[in-house]
Length: 348
Image (cartoon, rainbow, N blue to C red; front, side, top):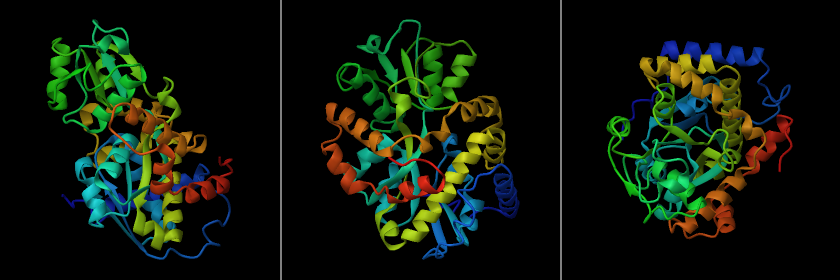
């Protein structure tokens, strides 16, 4: 597992982070006067956050200056691929993470990861693009689809939930190709596969070039737009032993989410500086950051997301747990409930 971000930002990045915090103050990203001042300091000054490369997780990458405002003096980003996340939690390598909700649910049950959900993060980002031979999701029966590079990865699990919702069996009704994304894009252009389930910038590039048709846009199409694609979580022991630090860290990340929502161009500049986004994808990623409804953390109940996807996963045999039992065991909503009140949002 790479630890390339474990030592935090460079001097340039840190100074840029201070500028971000100043901008946040100017545009009013504060829950209320003196909220953090009246709280006790965090039990620990160190927080380790998962770092990986989906650009839609921009707020997680931009949270460091806000975390420092909350009293964390040692902020570390630890690179953890999705396939290694359960192991990283078990080894106690990270304290907080962002991840695809369905993938995290799958790993928590299958690998008994000590991961607890804390809050929603953002809605949308995934899109399903079909060829001219496909007019609806139901038309995918018997067709060939790219849903990621490996079975039970993020795109595959999301795709499985999607086709199960319209009555197809993702295990029997779909043919899959497990290749790298660039190869899949070429195969799609050449008509060798019938659909691609992917997150940015792939769908935006295809649509801009007039290749394929948009079947599902999870930013806007119901029911997918009514639930969190990605959620915020943490190590159960960190949450239990550091409740003040956990609340302060979640507050910092919520501020970064709001900043990304209001200033997507600023978020993109930081992503380019960190080489999370390639220069050639700049146009598509700015479109993505503008279109993702980041502000939905204020409106949606994260519990609904787990319940919805747990039912879809049970339908496909990918999950056995009762949704409410899973929520009771693997979620801790007290921090987001308290913070919603601080931000003037009605909690559920």
